[in-house]
Image 1 (tube, protein in one colour):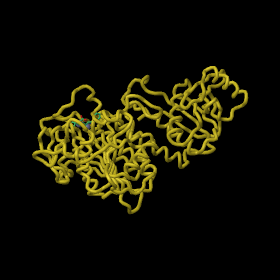
Image 2 (cartoon, helix red, strand yellow):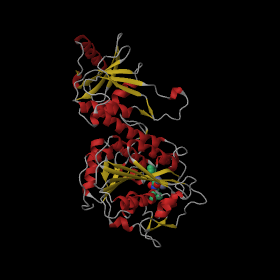
Image 3 (tube, helix red, strand yellow):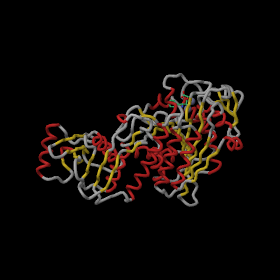
Image 4 (tube, helix red, strand yellow):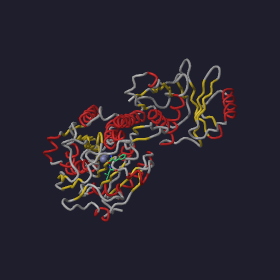
Length: 489
Ligand code: BES
Ligand code: ZN
Ligand code: ZN
């Protein structure tokens, strides 16, 4: 991760060459308190440039003595997504200036709004540049001074947003890392570092998983020279209540195994651990924010490779739950990993609810494109809470159906089930497969195959690893309400 944005809080106007950041409302209403003459000059320049103060619009003006960076905020600025996106726009405009130094004077904004502007700036400033050796590929440092009369580094809102940024950045880093650098053991080591935040971390190796009978997960990893791992991250912030559990698919590379994928685009499968990255990032954010709830994160880490020892199509494996699975397609491996991770989590922690995240199917891209992640659940309450968290954070979810008709497609002639259904409804049959490894816990499966990686940058999300899911899970825990196993759709 590269964080080249230094934000400081100060009451004194900085010295030297810097850009003054002015948030401008629709119809060119200037929010900061500028001297009349300066304001008149800016208004004239805005007219010439046809800058109207529309949300997200930006304009940089250079005069002989100073630089003004105008960013449109439309009708006004509210805390949440709105302020974050403007924060992202401010960072991008500042990064494009020559001096790369900015100062944002008093704007009479509410503290919450300033905190979310700050969040958006920091999320936008994330770059993954660890493997560039040539300096012209590396972004330059940017510094920004915010007035300190309302909030500063120590303010709880800023401390909170910094913890959230750390979680999102961690998830993005994990997703960006190539599979020769980040494989199960390395991923587990990175999780271990989170003990510094007060998380309890346990790492299960292959022998321990073998003892627990995790034949489904281990079958996927058996073709790889890299050993499989399971990591349990436990945050005990909430007394004696049952935890909420997050479970992640962590396939550090998915070749498809013996059911080998075609070469075109296979490099994308380095981010087949996006579900585990989201869970790890969320645990980092929750622990960093010292959230007063019990939350547990469990991730199944494997590499899916073809090899003399790899599992074959037609093999039958026994999951930890005791159920047998006929592996028709070794490329449908994520569900095998999650089968054991979900069962283990439910048995060990008896959670109030379980939410798993996985880059599970290409078919979810066919259904929902890149806008929404797919949500499958046995609980209306949990779905509603997740959907609300999705709207609040912009990490949007769309609930999909399940049911017996789809379950039937998983029937096998020689085992309890096959690992794939028919040619259609692939995301749904995958979700039904997972449901068979959940007993009586409110559960949701989020298929994030269309969301973990992005082909283009937005205001606060880079091209590449998005960290999708961290904001969502963090917000879900903040807004948590009891869930029951109400009827399924
Ligand atoms: N990791 C893939 C799903 C995926 C595809 C994620 C595209 C991100 C982008 C998963 O393991 C997989 O290969 N699924 C198969 C399932 C099929 C064999 C039933 C798929 O989607 O084709
Ligand atoms: Zn696969
Ligand atoms: Zn996969």
